[in-house]
Length: 425
Image (cartoon, rainbow, N blue to C red; front, side, top):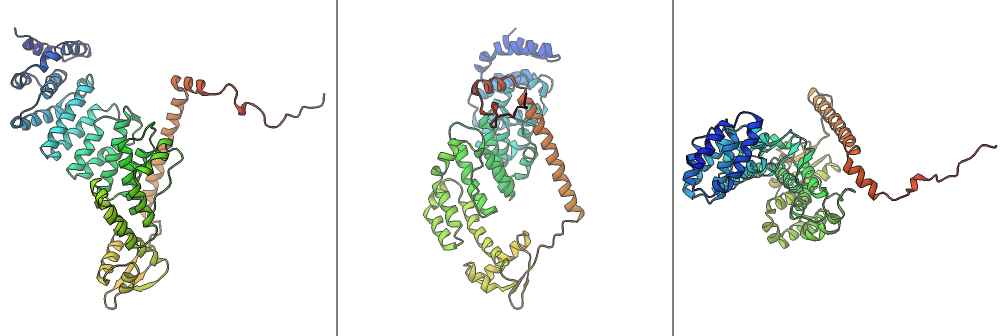
């Protein structure tokens, strides 16, 4: 019998129990180099003899060997169908025996879909792959960034929320976490949820690191722009930001720092001049769209300042004050801000007057009560989780050993700063 036919027979016979699967994996490893030497047609023939749901481990080895060679362009679509079907139907228990091979297969699948410029085809399979690879929803896998990337390329931002809204507490590779935060921030930008985008970019900036990474630099550029759009200022680095980031990051992003400094002047002409000066840099960084939103946000911020001074103001006066060309442009800005809930006002179309009003929210509606209750319950759950993690770290042998080595022989806290008073003998 042909050795590969014998291997397929063993895959079919040893795919039932855990003990058999362990034995089967050993056999598959022995045949790994042989499988990689086979032509695509031969590997396709082997796959046709296996059920992706019942024989997932063997199917994975053969399919992964298929991706090791260059796939002819005319066969790419066929490969994508086979790979998507396998990812969707395979046994999570079996593929987790060889997680690296499953990850490599999914990454190859993502590359081929990206090359064909059909990223939407990869969204559901990669989402399924993430779920099958995760030991729990709190675990970050190497496929999280790939899933978010195809969501971005397909502009299906809401699809990314399925994993972004889960709290992550376990990370295998720091680079995966940085990419997850970077792509996650971009997904939230696409959804116009700027506060969440800032949260994710900040994670990428403040994550522990010993050297500055390109991902951190790109995340900070977007962090600056989104901060200006959302709050009108760029906050200082948190205290827990790594020293290497605090020392070097601003020097790598000087055009963005200059843009932020000019924004604080409140003058459109100054900001526009800065934009034109660094136009090529912003364009090369693929941030020109965000920079234009920064410029637009300054108009809005200047209009918001007017609400703190005036009760009524004409559209023409608003246009003159915030440096808009016409009263019609001012009207469009005011209408958009009213729609977005950024100001509360009414426009009298007859005389072109705008009346500014107070926030009507009384914080006592059922919807607001549910929102506050949900936020409190989430904070309580996070508090319990943080306490649990703190207890685990406190008992971790490696952590205690390192703390013991790094602690000086005597600690100043070991001594009393004030002499004790002894009772008279």
